[in-house]
Length: 472
Ligand code: FAD
Image (cartoon, rainbow, N blue to C red; front, side, top):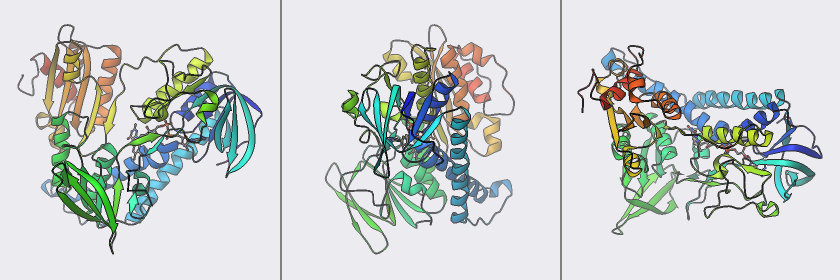
């Protein structure tokens, strides 16, 4: 990193240059504030370096290889040869381009960039260290904490980067394993499992609950599980990873179920993907009287303000949902509150996407949540097997579902499991944010033949007016 020299004071100090921190820094600088951004590792944080971007690059590359190898029904026979080394070089190139872009954007907006670890020494001061050496102190008027999260270590499965891998290690493998055991069928575990299964790796997924993607509706998750099974993933539900021992080729993981039956699975590595925890240990929060909740996330109010009035916290360190776009939105809000141009957070709709095969995307309320809120929901659905575009893509699994207020027709949420769900959900996010109705979405002309027609048809279906699927 090309850092600036340490100033003695700054109006706004931002700690951490992930999507929460760098967006906060740029937005604060755009408001005419003097901003210093300190980063201990790499610009772009988890998202650009070891999260969203490298994982999506690998997902795209493996999808291309997989689709080409499966295209015989379209008259295409391909003998696919994957050069994993070149694939990872390409992925690393994408990461470098984006992280370099973040640095340029920060500099171009006049943000002072510092390399080092920031640690509070008071409510208006941090100490900066670099490579363990104290660089000095920096006084600030406002601080925005955006220090992110890191993978949780499972007891007995300490990450060593060799046999026991975090998602970060798994995304940086330089050769393809023959076998992989993945602990945890959440979104990170499922995205990684799908990548490696598509590259021909024997993948076993151990999940202590009884479905993939716990937290998502069962019928949504089932579509992804079925596709995973077709890819050869061996799902072991209701089992808890208990211990591991080294083997000549890697590692043997022992699990047990609730009847105390024991099972063993071999892998070249085991990937532990059981969740993420906030990074606060380098911050010395108590020196600034910043409070955390029981899980260690920094407590914030609806303005992203912490228990100390001039200090804000955004992104993963401030809790769920741990998503890059939520971090960026909070970063913008914190900067605007500091600049006096925004009052409170009002994100009605934070979409979430899982880049499995097919993709899942959700926004707003499920039917059950709307019922619980007493909104007497109505639901519309469009199965992808009835979508002309889905048929031409050879991708007919899944559906688009919309949930609306039964009295007003206002769209409350949507759940999608289909190709490009991560893109399609944007229309529903806009609908939820602007309180659009089913009629407004259903009467908007959508391009043919596209997957977006499924959004329109699902909205029409809720009123019994869909044309391309039988109405409920
Ligand atoms: P981070 O991106 O974690 O950045 C925090 C930064 O703070 C880091 O650079 C860190 O080095 C720095 N830092 C920490 N402590 C200090 C200190 N004391 N001093 C100075 N610097 C410090 N989200 C999505 O929305 N979509 C996805 O597809 C997606 N895929 C993912 C895939 C994987 C494998 C993983 C692991 C995550 C994924 N995420 C995804 C989640 C996303 O990466 C995070 O939600 C996002 O990065 C959070 O941003 P942040 O700014 O809060 O923190």
